[in-house]
Amino acid sequence: MQYRALGKTGINVSAVVYGGIVSTDEVQADSDRHVEWAISQGINYFDVAPTYGDAQLKLGNSLIPYRDKIYLACKTEARTAKEARVLFEESRRLLHTDYFDNYQMHALSKMSDVETAFGPGGIMEMMAELKEKGLIRHIGITAHSEEVALEAIRRFDFDTVLFPFNWMMHMKHGMGARLLVAAKEKGMGVLSMKSFVERRWDSDAERYASRYPKSWCKPIDVEEADFALAAMKYALSLGVDTLVPPGNFESFSFNVEHIEECLAHPYSEQDEALLREKLAVFAGKEFFDPALGKSIH
Image (cartoon, rainbow, N blue to C red; front, side, top):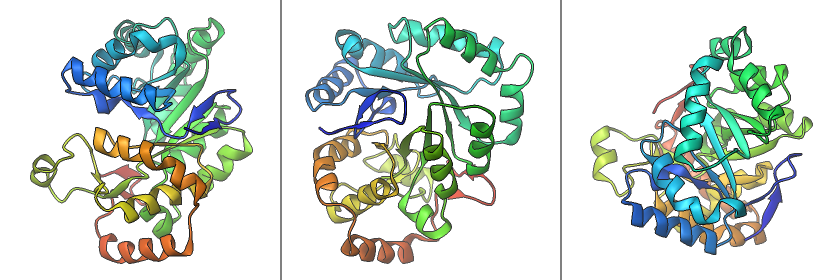
């Protein structure tokens, strides 16, 4: 496993992240097995959120033997300090930790989210306080709206940003291009989600009949290896620091098992041609509408 500097955080993060949804709705033994395998492969960064079903409970139990060996990131969709404190303490309890290596404002999607977060009684007051106390080592954001993310990082020097750097949406709309430049200028760590997404689900029926029901968007099928590798390489070619695969073990393990190949053999003209072909097929099935600033899932 290769490790890459996560911006100016001082964290050298594995080139693939364990997303907590991999543990969601698993029996505890399977979550334990997934985490043990991830650790054996060199994964050192684990990311979870209260909104991921029972992921905090399952992942928290699985990580007990490894907490001092890994970086643990958590999130909150709360925008006020009062609401966020309750969720923060619950996350610490379920994840069996005294502190978080990274704590992120989650799923920023509207400008009103930013106004509330930075206003009187907003979550930024709590985050600053907890960082001073050492309960939070770094502060980040996650977003699907580029405009909202840009406004948030204009107001505060966040340490990290987690954003969809998806091959289709970047090729077709340039989604994330301005954010990536701004984040790099500020020395932020850049985590890429949805790099491994093919398209949105056509319906809930398609999703729940598939082998990937925990994924909010349709992942690239791991059996389409050339397509999957091209999508991973595309995100890496943009300059992201690490990849966060969809929330199923098949996608996660594929990313882990092939990340060295992607780094050793970067994005090529052949990969570009393949993705251009896929773009023509899937362009009408986007997972995100930039005009709306809203994720379809």
